[in-house]
Amino acid sequence: MRGPRTLLDGNVTEKNLRPHRDDVFLAVVSTAAGLAFWSLGVYSSPGRGFLPAWAALVPLVALGAMELLRRTKPNLTLTVGTVGVVADQFTVGSLATVVIFTDLMYAAVVYGKPAMARRLPVTTGLITIVVTIASLAWLRTPQALLIGAITGIVSFGPALTGATLRNHREAAEAARLRAEQTALLAEMDRSQAVTAERARMARELHDMVANHLSAIAIHSTAALSIDKADTSRDALGVIRENSVQGLAEMRRLIGLLRDAGGDQEPVAVPSLDGLDALLGQARTNGSASGLTFVLHDERPSGEPAAAPVELAAYRIVQESLTNALKHAAPGTVTVRVAHTDGLLSVGVDSPFGDRPGPRAPGSGAGLIGMRERTELLGGEFTAGRSGAVWQVRATLPAEEKAVEA
Image 1 (cartoon, one colour):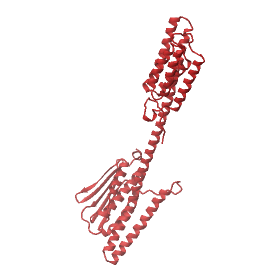
Image 2: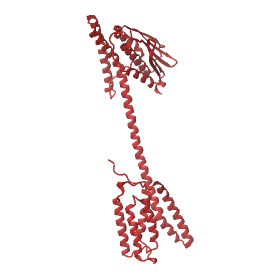
Image 3: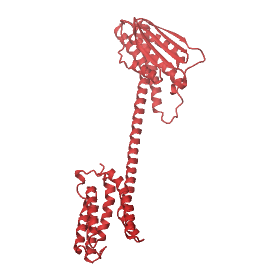
Image 4: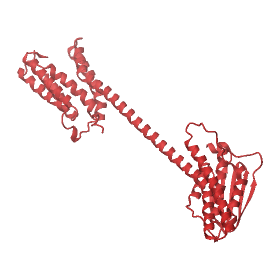
């Protein structure tokens, strides 16, 4: 766990009410040094006789005690310190008192509220200028400049140093926060990319295997329910064919997932040129259910769509045929493909009604996958019943630039 953060804005919590060990060290050392100077008779203004010599110990001890609160009570310490350093001017004076005041000024800028940190350098700078001008007007000697210089060293110098340090700390904290935000955004992008890749893999796996598994489920049910040798033999033939093809598709997908270094040869991506073979397989699988399949390919020759578009259209037709095999009533399933005005349109009509014989269960994932494929390419997708026909319609942009956008 991260430790308590350094105070930069004057906020005080229960954990930091206790004086910092560095502040305790400063308080003890500065007060002891001041007492040593006083005991040796070392005064900053020995000619002043307004008060007895011991009076210089009062502001010294008061400011030394404020060192304990320099981090947690910067407003209080600056107020007491200002009063104390002014009071010290009416005594024989202690150099330690002035030095402690400079540290309290510095701490007020570093640990005080942002408004105080902004005001103190400006205020002390103006005070330094006013004191310098007033000293020159009163004394009218070049030595009066020393009063202004000392005022600047005692007040403006510490305030400016504290403001510089605070700005550096705040810049470092802002850089740290930006780095954390960048790391968080990168993690969010990675998570979104993983989620999108999982969804793509789920669609691909469903579209490749669902057709074969549906045919296996339907024909295995037929083989179990109809006690005829010819029917069972035909059903087992279809089951074997779909099992082999499904296994080949699974191996291809597993190979793609394992290929991290790109050493495998490129795998052919399904396109609309394979629709004849796809419908031929559908005819074999659906013959026992009274289904026939017709293809109307109205695409102009020599004008293929972009590869991602062709793949999406192929998968939409494949999934529609799978749904027809599982749910359609006996009749004709019609597939239409057209390419006009830069758009590739796909339509599949299948008989809707009561279906005799075995059927395979559906989960609804197929329609979701078809809609996702279409929307990812910026197309439009609809699916629903129209009278006694179940219609699937997909319109995809055929241009490569539309796919990239």
